[in-house]
Length: 298
Image 1 (cartoon, one colour):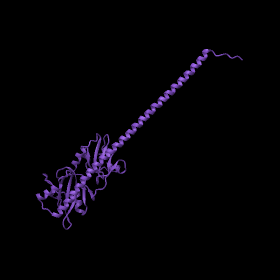
Image 2 (cartoon, one colour):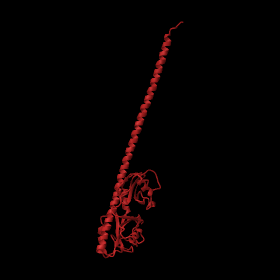
Image 3 (cartoon, helix red, strand yellow):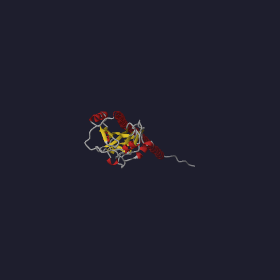
Image 4 (cartoon, helix red, strand yellow):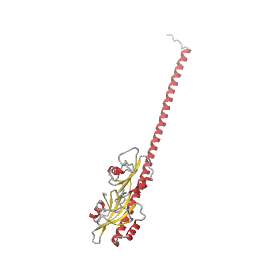
């Protein structure tokens, strides 16, 4: 048996092949490691971006919730102050029984002074005809005996304060909600009402000063979803009911804050268009008013 020795040329060729194989494997591992490093950086960047988005979203929701709560408290305080005015006026009228005239009207005006959200305070007789007003109006004031809040006070002794649906006032044709309390004669019979017209345009001006950005809106809602004020304005939806907005807050789909009795303030931070007045991402589903309160259609 004969063994032929390897030639130097053949040995060199095998060495080169082995070196080339090792180099190829090294390049492959370098590429794999590089891809893994890039993927790790990309994943880390994506995670950081997602976390930043979540923090930004949480911060925005918190700010919207705080703003909605502030607006709700502002509206709540306005209604509570208006009710205090009504209580005081009822006590004054039933105690002093003033005669119609400039003196009584001046006293009524003095009581209403300092309440910019209350457009006018009126005392109506048992037929709904104005007896006193806190300020003179040029327009003729018809009877309000056909208004639902007047009928509710007339037919229900002890009803307390009644808050109407949003309506257009007879005197100035301005959007308002009317708060009213019953007046009684000495024998307990119905003697009319005292009412305060809460000017909704004043709320509108406050909401117009809030910069929410394009595609967002502020809505003031009754707890049954009745739209009272919207910024930007939506005249066609004034007084319409959107109970799904309140239901969304009840189910925990939106942040819920305390505040405004028998009302809800909602912030709608939505891009794009919608036929509904809001798809709010922050809502107020408030606690009850501090005193017995009833809502009736306007």
